[in-house]
Length: 116
Image (cartoon, rainbow, N blue to C red; front, side):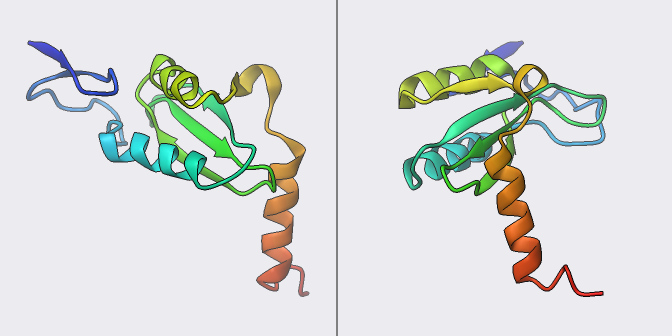
């Protein structure tokens, strides 16, 4: 028997995940929503499902801060983005924004990662 949770994730009751990773949960979606509501200029980037992981989305704020969570299907994050009036992109088509890489570099330098 199939059913959908409140975010539209399709699940089979009692079914096991045939992957190394776990399935997306409501907590994953809620974490993305909370991130988007507490930061400016958030955009979502959808990453495709792989053998090891479910479909994921990366939320990137205006300053490059980011978070990645499982979403189960691209349609789920598309609905979340629509509800929040935020853009959503396919990372395979657009790539990641430069501000995300700059943020990672700033964090690495702040943690002393550039020391030899």
